[in-house]
Length: 353
Image 1 (cartoon, one colour):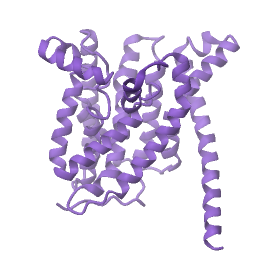
Image 2 (cartoon, rainbow, N blue to C red):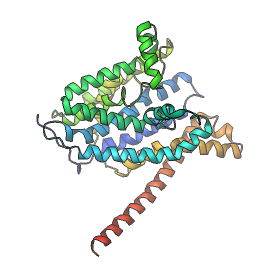
Image 3 (cartoon, one colour):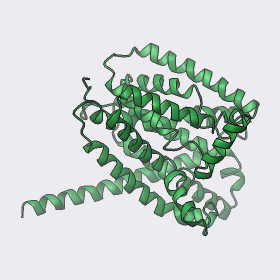
Image 4 (cartoon, rainbow, N blue to C red):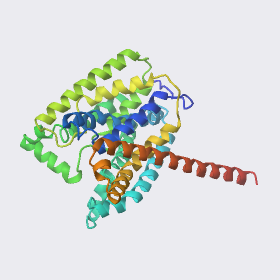
């Protein structure tokens, strides 16, 4: 099998831009911007449309990381390097949010070893940090599967895992209505709080990103755009029906999410405009810090007695959190850039001494 090599020097302006759009959707998912205007509109935005954000991040990683281990000449260097980066980032994020999680009561002080492992490996130490262990476990699962199976077989296995996750998420009431299946999910939920994790959720989007990277066919922009619009519209209908009949246990996984992500990702690859590489770092920083900004804004509003404006008004709350998160992210990125540059200079000096 001939493998398409991803040129690291090639710019991907569509992917860079949609990283930012995706992280804005994540902030929407956590602030409910339209809740005070119309609950249905807010559900559509925050609980359906915003669900494309995290799968997009997984697909970006799959697109750039996994092609090196598909085919006969497997090179795990890129995979190992990126997993190490994710582990380091997760450790830092955990150290930041663990005290907050304990203080807020989200994490019990006496949760025990099993409870601690469940939080660290699947849930994360704060509500948004599940993404990092989800990414780490997802990459490792797909990488191990690719050692034995080809990408099509891995896709089928990942799809099977996703279907299991689907009936523990948006289609749970259907699974719950069948006693034997209900017992199976009761067993699953002894180990995981949600099926939206690195086992049942992320592998499918990692391998889908890799498959797109290795696809030699050149997609047509209009087909991808209209495909995305049509499938997203159908996913909105799917989500509204599931919500109306109260079938969902959670709202992260939809049947139509897979075709939506395929068309969306292919479409972004065809976007032509100026590339802003700084957006690559900013989107991840915003993802990590925005819950902290939510806490800061709520605290600030309480001290100044501005809760009615900055907290109770969901739309203003969203705008404030988004603005604060991006400002803080640019500051952090600037400081990290200075530190990295200084280390690079010092390292260069040492090599020439």
